[in-house]
Amino acid sequence: MPQDAFSNRVSSLTNASRKFLSDIGAWSRVDESRVARIEEMQVWDGVSDASITFNANEAGISMKDGHAAYMTTMTENLNLQRALIRTLDSTSGVNIIDNTKVSSIVKDTENGGWPIVHTSSGGTFRARLLVGADGPNSPVRKFAGIESYGWAYDTRAIVATLYHAPRVEGLQNPNTTAYQRFLPTGPIAFLPLSSTASSFVWSTKPAIAAALTNVDGQILAHMINAAFRLPEVSLRHLYRVIMEEQENLTPEMILEEIRWRERSHSIDQYSAYSSYATEALGVPADDADLVPPVVKSVQEGTVASFPLRLSHADSYIGEDERGARTALLGDAAHTTHPLAGQGLNMGLGDAQALADAINDAVLVGGDIGSRTALLPYTRSRYFENHKLLSVVDKLHKLYGSTLPPVVWARSVGLEVVNELDVLKAAIMISAGSNLGSLKERVGRQGVSPWSVAATGVEIAGGLVDAVNLVGRTFQGTVSAGLRSVAESMERR
Ligand SMILES: Cc1cc2nc3c(=O)[nH]c(=O)nc-3n(C[C@H](O)[C@H](O)[C@H](O)COP(=O)(O)OP(=O)(O)OC[C@H]3O[C@@H](n4cnc5c(N)ncnc54)[C@H](O)[C@@H]3O)c2cc1C
Image 1 (cartoon, rainbow, N blue to C red):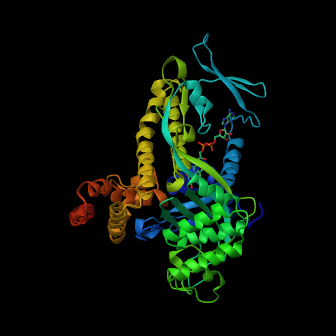
Image 2 (spheres, rainbow, N blue to C red):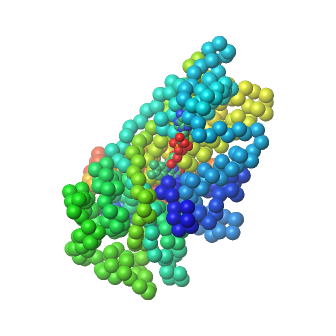
Image 3 (cartoon, helix red, strand yellow):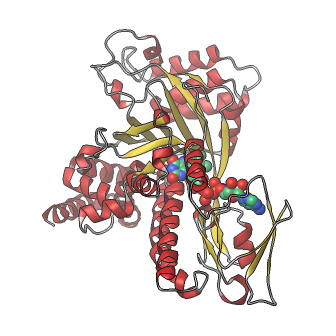
């Protein structure tokens, strides 16, 4: 791709994932000119505007590779895939067979029950260990007869590459802040790629997603700006406009509608929340860093949308006669909502743990396909992944509500967490679990901005049930309870 164009499939990598990629020699093959480091993230509630800011310095993260402290790294999946293929290609003993489909997998019933893989190019492979890294519809999972539970979110994620003006040097932070606004229809995230290009992921109801992917790119750009700025009531109206008037709608019409809405909400024309910010020259508005830069256009051919679902395989390793000598990882084992940017990171964590298990088995002369060899893999990953899947799922549900007690509880939680630097740092490091050795936890779990937010908000989420049960009179107790939790964490 030309230097100013980006693929629409990008991922945020935790520092732990990046370290793993460095350790296996893949990161040095990534094109660094197409990598963006995220130093800060802003997350806010689209209904109450309660917000939380996370900054890499607060977590005590200091990287040694000549860059300012950063929380996560954005890169195109293609950039990473190319680096991984080059790494494999230069590793002795690895044979890459590409442009080939696995057409069937059968069990070698006569010789020990090993899996036999047949490919569309006529190849046949008898596997001591068959690893299914073959995505959500995993043929390996089906072969092994491993069930997977979960549900479809009534949501699609729209992605595209966006162009905008650079941040003003010396007066603003560079484009190193990621933004996520939780709307009742789903979150919208802005993810920097370069000084003038960023990616976005907008998870929303299928009907709205269909309209947004069908409209002219300029209309989509206006809608993205509005989604980060306008109150929910106006967004609901704009969704209706694009769904009902798709055929005749022009960018000028939607912009006029947005401007009318801004006036009715008394949004100052000189504020970064105004669509007139696109035309602003000179000194940026005081609140310019609170919202993403105004999107000017959408890169042609990059708008796409994906269905979202939660799924988790019952097991990561095949059991008994049928699935012996199989292991699952990545989306073959679990899929999650992208709001926490964790799918690929979880898969990389799986790969690392599986490699460790295989290595340990080889060192003691064990059989790498045996249940004994694979158990440490599933033990180290299953519960970790389960926790993350469940936090993300709760977060999705929590923010889908506009019920006042729910909005109140999540907003109080978010604001309280935002005020307590020590608690925030702890959340960033430990992603919500017990504080152990900070260093050890960074190494093991890493920090993803969205999972950090997910965990911070989960604290608020825990309040929702209680609030629903006992009503508003409980508010003071809840706040006091939260404060004491925070204080006890500060003491530790
Ligand atoms: C909008 C969106 C944004 C996301 N953002 C992030 C993010 O910021 N950070 C993050 O960590 N994750 C993110 N994710 C999740 C991430 O993209 C996935 O978790 C990740 O791509 C899964 O990788 P995988 O290799 O396990 O599966 P896949 O990417 O599905 O790869 C499976 C591979 O197996 C191949 N395959 C399947 N069947 C066969 C067969 N029969 N023969 C041969 N080959 C076969 C497929 O062709 C495919 O290449 C996002 C997801 C979405 C939808």
